[in-house]
Length: 210
Image (cartoon, rainbow, N blue to C red; front, side):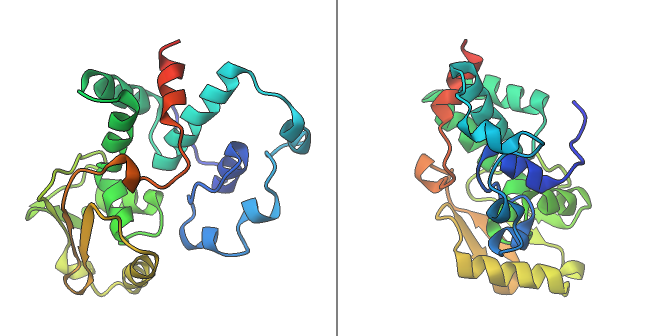
């Protein structure tokens, strides 16, 4: 599947909620979703009143989560297959796998203002995991692992601003940030309660089980 390169705000409007794809802009009145919360396109406002089918509801939920974490259709299907083979509830397993992606953890720790920016930073080799260079955004972190920004990037003003903003908003309980030393530690695996976005994972399970 080709990578989406269009306007990010259109994705938020399509899904009917903020997906926080553009970092700090999403927290300001410049956010396109705040100004036009209806779907994009010529008939966007009419779609608000249109009744969705059961299939459409499940499809939109799957698309929403896929876009939140910025993964392709093929990647998302692989995560679902893996989650389905794990013990426990498939929906919870799926969200846990997505949360454990290194690019998501970098974003959650506050080094980046968006997951897209975090993915670029990881791919460009800005981070170490347990002292080893890791440039794979889909790398799944484990409890006890330490994510560290490399020394030569610590004076970057944008990264410092991102960290300050993240500290104000709060860090998830399953992660621990040492902002002074530009390090983050994975304390535990994320639980369902740690994922605060309004996601109905059961609809995704139903979509793939149809």
